[in-house]
Length: 274
Image 1 (tube, rainbow, N blue to C red):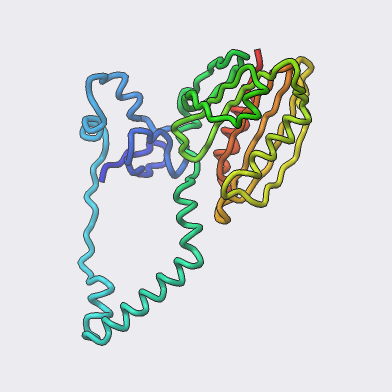
Image 2 (image 1 turned 45 degrees about the horizontal axis):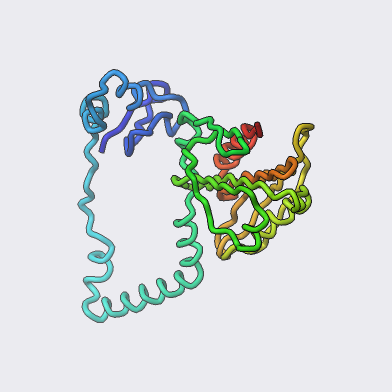
């Protein structure tokens, strides 16, 4: 396997992808990263980088017999049958207690650590312009609206990140007709109800705090919820209202992911309504 050696502590870091930047042991920046090497060698790829810079260490192959050879084969056919029954029983029990949680956790992983170090995009989107900085691109994601809501709106636009590796970022913008009420209280109540109504969401807990801004009315909803009874998600809902316009910036990530919390706060702090 290929490794990058840390000049600070001497630790060998497994080179599994081109994003390896910091030492897994001491946390300091590695001297020879793929990104820096690529700038000097624009015509070469990751495989060339591995051949030129990485240290290859051949993994040792154990000569000891496997556990089946060591424990089951001497017992003969009867031992194999007994072992198969035990394994089947263990899988059934484990599946009952842990299978659901494991599958949901696998389907909703923690955030990619590379998001903290990649170049962030600062963009202004929407007709009722809002500026936001994110580590991934936000694409148009217009969703179907109920007939009752469509009749109340002059404009609606939705954005979200397609590359949702452990974090979901959404931006929703609406402009209500002059005859329709658009209060901040109604907007915050609706935002919480929409989360509660989602499939698989339970045990919703959150607090609401007004924004310390004078040019726009806003509330930050911060809390957590249980997703499909297996994994706890944290969320930020930034709800803002000005006149007939309404903005909602939503961020979700796993509650046991401290990196997700750091990135979510950075995104929230970057939001500005033009």
